Amino acid sequence: MPDDVTTGWFDARIVTGAHPASLVPRSDRDAIAAHLDIYAMSGALVSAMASWLHDPVGGNAEATAVAHSLADRGVLACWTAVPPTPGELQSLDALVDQAVAEGVAAFRLHPRSHGYSPVTTAMHEFYAALAANGLPLCVDFTEVDWHHLDHIATRFPALPIVVSSLGYRQLRNLWAAIRDHENLYVDLVDFAGHQAIEWLAARGLADRVLFATGLGLRDPGESIVRLAWSGLDDDTVARIGVGNADRLFGVRRTAMAEQLGGRA
Image (spheres, rainbow, N blue to C red):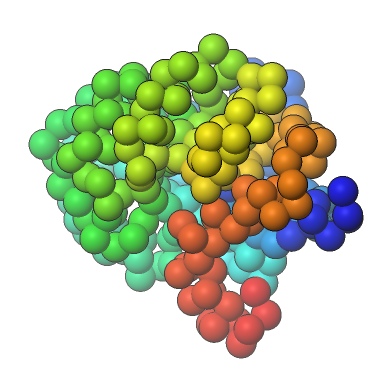
């Protein structure tokens, strides 16, 4: 495979911060910059460990700070939301408006970790706001159930939903969900089924797969090798590596490039 096919990828799942039980080093601004350099990537979507483990809303500022400091490298912020609670978050609509104003590219939810249902009325309003503003929803499979994903994808067909951390025993369920919902995507973090990418591509679903490494949570080589050494043709590798991300996050990438005078 030519080298240029394995460069310029967009990493759709990076976490800045340190997990207390992680076996991989802390991921910070410099580590993310080095990651982009080593693997010749065109950008990344960054969320904060603090938003998952400590401060669901406060960690968003950390993700934005990293994204802004690496804006010329194509890095975009991914924020976290929780249901409105006095003293923590007053309005999900206002949070989405703020995210749009600050160039945030997507939102990530951790409903199981944060102790709420992802299908409450308050979250319905949030999903509608995301869809209206073209902001994808990202979620680890460990945080939701398939019936939650089915409910959200059915009720909000214009909302792209990216599922991460599927492991290797979920291909049957993924097939049914991704077949039934055109707005459902999967990324490559822990997408460990043998030739699972090739299996989806052979069924015309390469457009629903996003390259992502989970830097900060996992060794990035896992996803990189899985795509680079796959049996896919060059066009399909490029589509998964960056093309699908451009469709989902391209508006924010373009806006960032314009702000930077075309340098992004």
